[in-house]
Length: 366
Figure 1 (cartoon, helix red, strand yellow):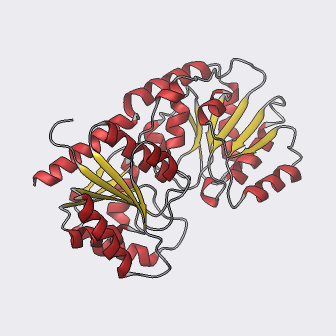
Figure 2 (tube, helix red, strand yellow):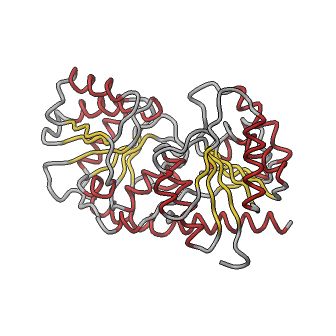
Figure 3 (tube, rainbow, N blue to C red):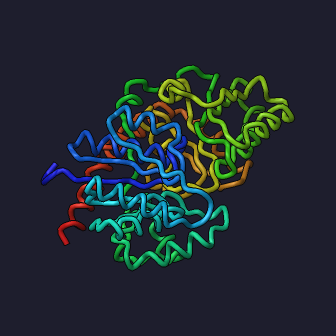
């Protein structure tokens, strides 16, 4: 660290389990390890990941916002920002950005940065989009997690190009590096798998349908989907309806992602909307080749051919074809090694922390 420690407050909706929330906690822990003084504000309730943050010495403060716009929450957040003597307010996504911005203004915080993690194109959020556009004159920087995301927000969401920059997400690599997968080592058995919330954006139903098309060609193949969510029952019913219960495994949420990933041969991302999914970075760190839909920043981090096979979003036949190409490849082990090397070079949480620190210091020095 060059310079005095920074007092950094991240603002999120909650710390429920999810990629954005995982990044916020990992980033705060990395900031603390680098000598800074981080804290996390949850505009709504704390969520399950709050326990991990607090165990690492990162304060988590929840404001339990009710429905509708409330000045009382902004006043309470501003009071906490003054108490913490925050240098930087770092908000995540658009829903609560105006709360963080107004509280920072009220508390006299010098720098406000927003990170947009996805494209937010699956649902209508006109009010949040209006608020987000309205805050641009007072937002010091908008960070996107991929080049694809930067182009989207500049072209379609009114973000001025000169305040928009890319900082890739990062993950704590050590625990994934410690348990490397051995892709292709147990042919003809091949284990495809993924980790993620069972929600519409992840399109696990498309993945299950694609696997049904793969299985006749590779009858010893398996599909493992770790996660839970609103579509868990529907996905289980689909597995039943397609007579896949012997080959498709739905273990629910995993508390040990490294152990889950090390038993796979190929990681599969079937999402129809993503920014820069940290689960792909984790899979790469675990030495896994990737099959993915061509979405968001995934092609930026997992090069086609050397690390990944790609399919069109929402297309089960296209995803099945990519999975069959992976199954037929004699290079799965080499692709896993290449994935691990890229993860080590580009996607450690320490690198992400240093890039945010450099940004914060530049803005504070203006």
